[in-house]
Length: 272
Image (cartoon, rainbow, N blue to C red; front, side, top):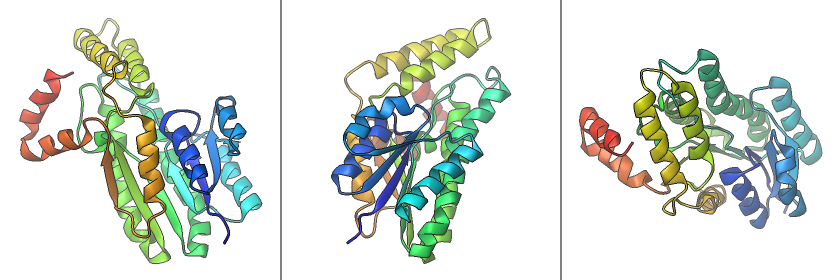
């Protein structure tokens, strides 16, 4: 029986890297894709194929998918993991940066999906995993543009799921909570940078301090846990449509369901 082929975006670190390893261990032919190919040498050493990919560049995305299809003849699993968090008050974040956030977190994901679907439809099989966030269900201070992209990924995935189901393709949304990666440190740095000398500086620095404290602590979930979740989701016959997993994810989403928006705002402000 021919091995299934998996493509993982954002595979140079964190969840993407661990997912590449997990799927390789599960017997997949794995392609780990990222801009920083030099960060994936350890994946190459494990027998994982590495490939250059910039999800903001059309030529890069087309070349990536075409190269895999030419070599393997199919792509059975796409894990749309590439993304980042751009934090800052809506008033402070330059529109150029806001557009980049949407380009990476939503449009890149959408375009990669478009590119793999013809092959999946032809084979009447496919698993598309969109890595969203608990931030696609709840919100945090100064995360307007980031949360906008993740809320959008949720709706995009729901519509896509109904469109492709007749072709034997599953769409799976993974919603991580707090994960032990550099994501929060980078987001905190962005928040401080755009808030300098502005009306939101004091509150933004407080939020950034709390983010750094959280992301340098010991409570967060290891990215390996998310990788195992993805590994299970793409190998079972009938996966869930959503997997809410990781530190704080289920409690936060539950609180959102029982409190009003304004009450939830107060809870978030207390911890950020």
